[in-house]
Length: 342
Image 1 (cartoon, rainbow, N blue to C red):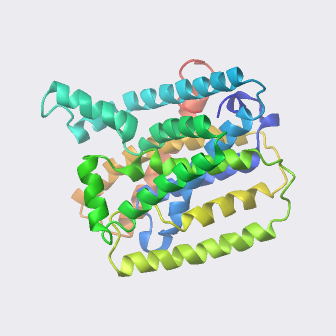
Image 2 (cartoon, one colour):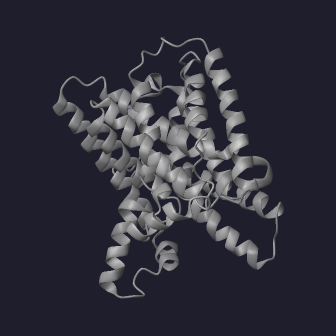
C-alpha cells in the first residue's frame, strides 16, 4: 500500500485488486447479517485475507528497497498515510461514533483516555479496528521481520490468544476471565493481535518470486482441507456453545493462506480500472459498517426480521458505499491531499 497504489494501472496486480474488492463485499455481507445461517462461517475468511492483501503489497514494495533507511522511510510513509486515512474517516463518522460510545459521560479526562485507547487498540467508528490493527501489526512485523522465528512465534501466539478468547471463550472461562482482569476493556480479536499472523504470512509470501509456485493443485487441495476443518470447527464450537464471538477460527490459519496462494498461481494480469477497485475496497470497508449499524437499528424499530433484515441492509449498504466510492474516487482526481482511500 506504499507507492504501489499511486502507480498506473500498467503496474497494478489485478489478481489482488479484484480479490480485495470481492473481500470488501464479503465483509459487507458479514456485517449486514446477510443470510447468516448460510454464509457463516465462510465469510470469516474475508478479514484475514484483507489483511494479507494489504500486507503483501506493503512488504512486496519494502523488499525491493535497497537500504534500511529507505525501508524505514517507506514504513513511515505507510503509517502516516494510514493514520491520515483513519482520522479523515473518523471525522466523517464523528457524530454516530461519539453518540454510540458516549465518551464523556464520566468526565472529560476519562473520555479522552477511553477515546485514545480505542483509537490505538480498539475501534472508534464501526469496524475501524482494522485500520489501527493494520498500522500497529505492520509496524511490529516490519521491526521483527529479520528475526523470523521470533516474528512467527509472536504472531502465532497472539492469534492463539484471540482464538481462545473468542471462539473458545466459554470453554476456557478461567483464561478469558484472567485476561479480562489483566486488560479490562480490551478485546484482543478487535485489535492488532488478530492482524499479526496474516501480516507475517503476507511478509513471507512477498519474498517468494512470483513464478515459483505455478501449480495450483497443492493450494486447491489445502483450501479444501481448510474448508473441511472450518466446517468441523464451527460445528464443534456452536453445538457445544463455546463461542463468545465467531470472528477468529483456528482453521483460518490453514484456509486463508491456501486461498491467497491459489490466487497467486493465476498468471499476473492487468486491468485498466482494477486499481480503482482496490481503492474502492478500502472506501467500502470504512463506510459500510457504520451505515449497516444504523440501518439495522432502524429496521429493528420497524420489526423487520431475517432474512429480510439482512437482504435490505446489504442492498442499501452496498449502494451507499458504492456512491461513496464513486464520489470520492472522482473527487480524489481533483483534491490531491484529501484522499479517503489507499
